[in-house]
Amino acid sequence: MAGNERRIVVGVDGSDPAAAALRWALTQAAATGAGVVEAVNVWELPGYYTLAVGVLPPPTEGLEPEQLAGRILAEAVARETAGGGASDASGVEVRRLVLPGPAAAALLRQAEGAELLVVGSRGLGGFTGVLLGSVSRHVVEHAPCPVVVVRAPRQDT
Image (cartoon, rainbow, N blue to C red; front, side, top):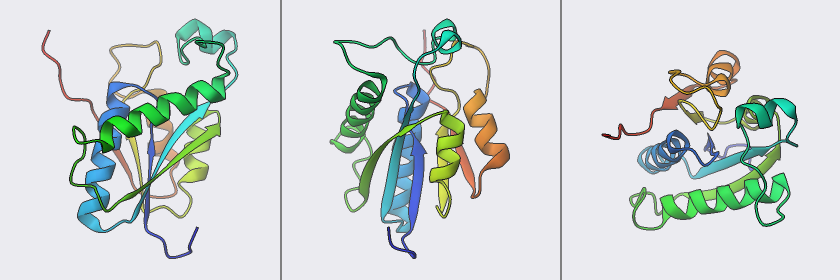
């Protein structure tokens, strides 16, 4: 990575707020001339806590957690870069990174030297109804760069 490279790091976990964060990061990168968006999904081996609160979906089709995280990330990036997403971000390079967790620590490490860190307001954790998820809250408090927290569009029920 070049020392003067302008990059935006965005956490992507397959949730609606993370999809909105990725879309926002791509649009922001295009608007400000930041040439790179690093889309990051973090995996952990599921333990009792993660399974109890539903942080990581159970493995499917025999995939290991790292492979599942890679698939989720690839699908999210494909959705947001293919016509229906942030279509005005055509000049932005998107790098997909699958890193070992915990999520907040991995995002903070990746954000070193970044112009901006973008996260969804809450992820796949099992505590619904909270305004800010634990990962979002932690990175806001400890990030080495400015942080933007993006909420998913409100869906009428």
